[in-house]
Image (cartoon, rainbow, N blue to C red):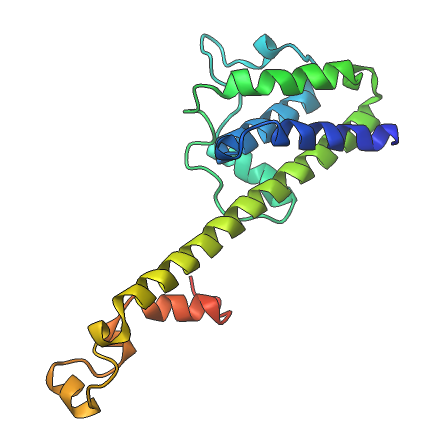
Length: 193
């Protein structure tokens, strides 16, 4: 393993150290922001990264998180509040800072450090994409499951004739299931927003 890949492994190991239910958007945001803070000040003590008079992470805001993600081509909103409401965030970030200190991040040249921080943030941006994609797939699965359980007849489709459906005011999918039109566009690749 080369020194340049060591830090990407550290960030991936930090992420994997959380139980699956704790691999959250807040931890991604916190990791992105603390790494950004390390660009300006390589202090690896957690106290140096707290906002003045607070136990919150300094510079943790939606704007800062989105700006970092945009560098990696991700435009979707990770968090509305940028990780500021996560009470356990500082405790979660402590092992990351300790691992970076143990690996000698503070000994790297400024150029090498900038490069490694970018690599670690790229790993976290990929984790954000994984979360976005998992949520999207879960939504689709849930909608399909609900429709299948309800049965087509419940929506005015099936053995009824077209005339019978029209007399009840159901002439097609858009009236029977208004929300399906947006799913259809998502599923077949239309870029409606």
